[in-house]
Length: 229
Image (tube, rainbow, N blue to C red):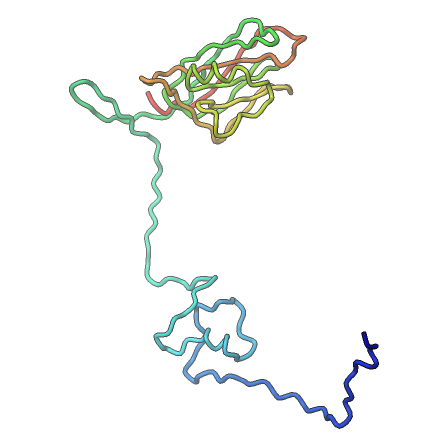
């Protein structure tokens, strides 16, 4: 490979020419900045790109970007406060609709001795569908709620503290592990329902002992908002 010195081209006889001035695009006299500029900043120069962002009162396409121009005309916004929910009731001969206030309710379950490795399984009368508000227990444990007894029986082999397998588990409403006092937990976005056929108001509960050295009974208190009656 030749050296750098041998690779240089002889520049004798060449002269440096001054750079040509940039071509300035001319904005039409009747043009004004378009309200739909693609950039909220004003154009710094007139080039072919910024020229297309000016409105020359033609029918050509225009770019719509943030911030959107203010809409003309008036509009009326109506805010409605709903304090009641419609509950449909039916019979063999006719059906009717009535209104009822949503009122929080409480369900309580008292377990037997929570033996390590043997969960306590039972059911609670709550509502056909509901929104969970809070749950509290008296001793460290893990509480699981189900929509069917079949889901309760299938989920019994899942270890305490293990997450619910995604996409392959159904009718597991919630699972809460209590290990720090006070043993209370509040929900913000958890709803549940009974999935039996025909639908009932029973919700299936399993309570697991998470402290093998403390085999004692527990009281589970669930506060919920019934959505059906």
